[in-house]
Amino acid sequence: MPRPKSSSAAGGCGRCSFDWRLKRPSWGHGYATEGAGECLRFAFESLRLSEVVSFTVPANARSRAVMERLGMRHDAAGDFDHPRLPAGHPLRHHVLYRLMRDAWQRSATAGTGEPP
Ligand SMILES: CC(C)(COP(=O)(O)OP(=O)(O)OC[C@H]1O[C@@H](n2cnc3c(N)ncnc32)[C@H](O)[C@@H]1OP(=O)(O)O)[C@@H](O)C(=O)NCCC(=O)NCCS
Image (cartoon, rainbow, N blue to C red; front, side, top):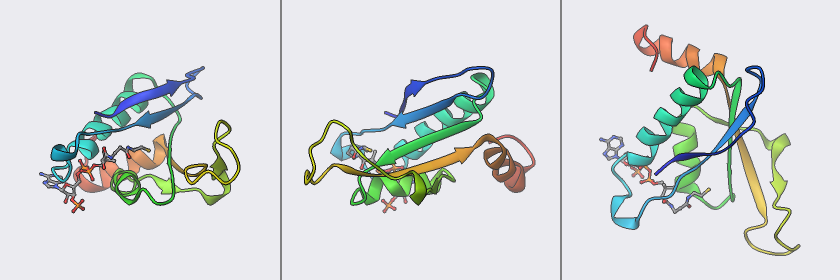
C-alpha cells in the first residue's frame, strides 16, 4: 500500500516522497490511487508539507499513471540518475513528479468545494 517514504518536515516547508506497491491481483481496482490520495491528505493537512514529490523509472507506466491521477506533474528538470545504480543499469534513470499544496487545494475545491 502507499506509504510516506521519507519526510523532512521543517516549518511547513518540508517535502515528502511516497512509495506504492501492490500484489498483482490487486492491480486495476484503484487501490493505489485511493491510498496515495489519503497519504497526500496526511502530508498536506496534518504534516503541513508544502510539496510532495514522487519518482519512478520512465517505463513504469502504471506508477506514472497513479501520479497523474493524483494531480502530480512531471518535472523533467528534476529527473535524475539513482546514485546507487551503476551507469548503464536499466533502472538507473528516474522521472520526478511534484505536487504543491496550493495546487492540491485548488484541484480539490474546483471539484467539490470541499477538501478532497
Ligand atoms: C504501481 C502500482 C501500485 C499501480 O497499480 P494500479 O492498479 O495500476 O493503480 P490503482 O490501484 O490506482 O488502479 C488504477 C486502475 O484501476 C481502475 N479502477 C477499477 N475500479 C476502480 C475504482 N473503483 N476506482 C478507481 N479506479 C478503478 C482504474 O481505471 C485504473 O485502471 P487502468 O490501469 O486500466 O487505467 C502497481 O502497478 C504496482 O504495485 N507495481 C509494482 C510496484 C511498483 O512498480 N511500484 C512503483 C515503484 S516507483
